[in-house]
Amino acid sequence: MAYTAPVENFPGEIVEVNIGVAPNNVKIGGEKTFPLLGFEGDVPNKPKIAMEVFDNNPEDWEAAAKAPFADVLADPVAWAQKCEQEYGAELICLQLQSTDPHGENKGGDEAAETVKKVLEAIKIPLIVLGTDNAEKDSEVLPKVAAAAAGKNIALGPATEDNYKTVAAAAMGFSHNVVSLSPCDVNLAKQLNILLLQLGVVEERIIIDPSTGALGYGLDYTYTIIERLKLAALQQGDEMTKMPIIGNLGMEVWKTKEAKTESNDDWGDQETRAVSWEILTATALATAGADLLVMRHPKAVAGVKKVLAGF
Image (cartoon, rainbow, N blue to C red; front, side):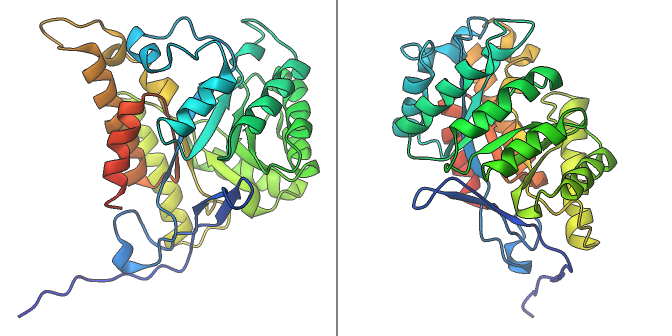
């Protein structure tokens, strides 16, 4: 007797969000079932990979992370082009680290100029993230939104402390909003409620539930993403049905497993760090993340092979 797999139909579905401008735009979300269960419902868009680019030279990076970008680390425009043309990034995630008030503390005008130059140099869509300093991001991100007018970027983070300013800037120039909350389902829902009340439409919101990359952090992140998807698909929860981004590259490379130098006990550092980034990205995609922000080209290549089976 032939085996027939049980099929569960869900009342909810994930909203589809469009980033970028045709013909090079990218769509995320839209699924009506869980990852790897395409036989139960439509999964129009597999998880997408964005490669991170910093707007300043990240001198504190590990040598293994710097090596693939050694010739472009001081030039975010060339760095973005390399990710697109050589490493096959589907999107670029520009991290505005130079605006960190505890670092270089550059202003919004400088950040906006960098964003404009990157947009002119690449064809693929752009995500722009501030430093999660609510006051500074409120100064910088509106100028970025204006500089990116007409490009339909994803802009963030919008948090409980600055969502009005960031969301208003995004709406004013027709961009998407990356909604960042601590790793908690109810806090993610509450921020989405606030954004919707402000006038942001659900097709413009991407949930960032925060990412942990080691031990309890990864375990908790996986669980939160899974619970957000369960609420959206099984319960039809309107406040959790937006696609999810996992900003994992920077978190992975902070861990001891990635930073510890090569030794006889732990083996080669690059192999270990790349493997950990692949593992983390795969875990988040399996939980339900729709957009993965990654760092190392070898990890990107590895995860692409995994996602081919989704």
